[in-house]
Structure formats: structure tokens, C-alpha cells
Length: 196
Image (tube, rainbow, N blue to C red; front, side, top):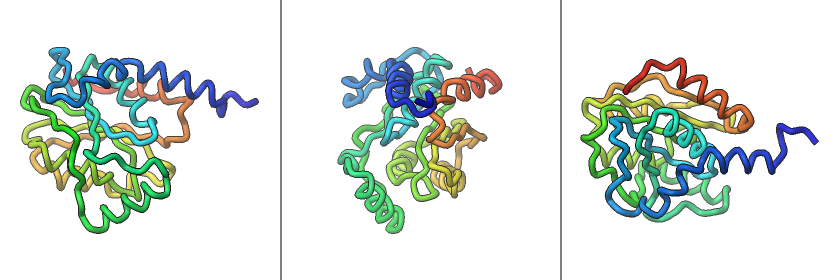
């Protein structure tokens, strides 16, 4: 069997990379994020887990705080139903209600914002996150996963929804390349100018 597509290997890599996220799962519903004293926040939305893996690697690599962006009402488990709901939300401009917000956003100078590209754009829940938080004067660094169609118009969405933030070039990878996720993220972090 080809190691690149070994489901057990993929599961183990995902579990190892997301290990620091497990301890935060129960505290996410409260208004406070467990604080490390870092001025960097990693905020992410992930449906399938690919973006969650990248978020965990960035959080550990930078010693940053972590916040999972979740809708108050979860997207359907069924992939095709989620695609249809996201299309309807995108087309209507609807922004779903957030389960919680970052209450001490002023404590952070830099926000790494992670999300998958849905329908060649930013998911509606991420637009809702941007609308709900004032990012004036913040440095916003996106990290994205996609299924092969690239970033679409996600950069313009970030600039529109966070017009007073400094939007930097970020990290992007095709989701189907999990076996290289750790090396690529860690390589990017080591080459990236420190924002600490």
C-alpha cells in the first residue's frame, strides 16, 4: 500500500498535530481563551480537520493562543448539504451567528486566521467572525487550505471585512497533501519574520 494514502498514517498525524487542541475543547464555550501571555492569536475554522491541523502546528510553533471559530448552529455532517448551505449563505450575504467571540482581542497584535476555501471564497462563518471583531491596527495573516481551486477571492473578502487591519501574505496548501503538512507549515514558520 502506498504510504501517501494510508488512512491510519493520516489519522495518527492529525491526532498528533491536534493534541494541544484537545485540552481546549471544554473551555471553548466560555468567554475566555486560555492565555499563554502571547500577543499572537491563532483563530481558525475547520470543517474536516485539515485547517485544524495547520492551526495546531502554528499555535505550537509560535507559542500563541488558540481560538476555534464555530457557528452557533453547526453545519450539516453531510458534505453535500454543507456545500449547498454555504452556497446559499454566500449568495445571500448571510453571516451565521458565532458560538462565541474573542473577548480580549485587544490583547493581541497579530492574528493568524485559518480557514478552508469554500466555493472559491471565504466561508460565511469566517466573514461573521471578521464582522464581529474590530481588527483595527492588527496584523492579519491568513492560512488556508483548499481542494485544488486556489484562494479565489478570499483576500479581497479579508480586506473588505477588516479594512483597518494590515493583511499580510499567508500560507496556503491544497488539502489533499496532508503527508507534507507538518514539513511545509514548519518550513514556512521558520522562514517567516517573527511577529513576536
